[in-house]
Length: 238
Image 1 (tube, rainbow, N blue to C red):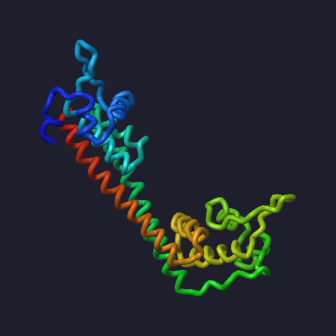
Image 2 (spheres, rainbow, N blue to C red; image 1 turned 90 degrees about the vertical axis):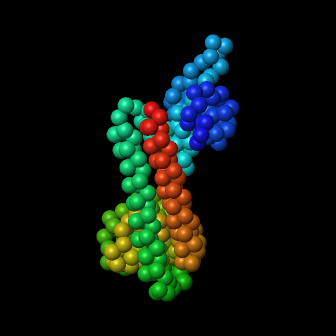
């Protein structure tokens, strides 16, 4: 980074240029505690140094990987005397990404499993009450209610009794979920799968959307890696 890490006098515009932010954004980051308080000249101008540039760069990368709220918390923790809180927060973000990656892999496997079998076109006669569907699938009605709460199969309600009514498409969704649950696939993976399937109704399109999710996870993981490098530099400067 050259001057940005070694110079003892940087103006707001220089910090903004070196970190990729606007002047107002740098002031906002200082206000929010992401940057340490700047010193002031006798005439009242802010004076920054290398640690402010690295702090802003760390936040920029972490915001891309973990979101702006979490990124602010992590960088504020990096300014503390002990790195324990910062590392714990980073570990939590990495664990969340690992969970997303694992669920996505399970979802992709579930799509391959179910797409090998034909899914018949829905028929108007397939509409059912919750009791009828539970009986048809050999399930308890409480299981169907749980699937509704979990976002797997979400039927409409009758206007008078607020009872669940399963349209032919809902019935088909329930059969898909039932088959995949019997095959051992978990709720998180199926929540992803059914959300995408309801939007597309084509397994090939679901796989395309899963690739987009996979690319997002990879992008955020790389951003966290970049942010961790800046945090390491930040700790050295501190």
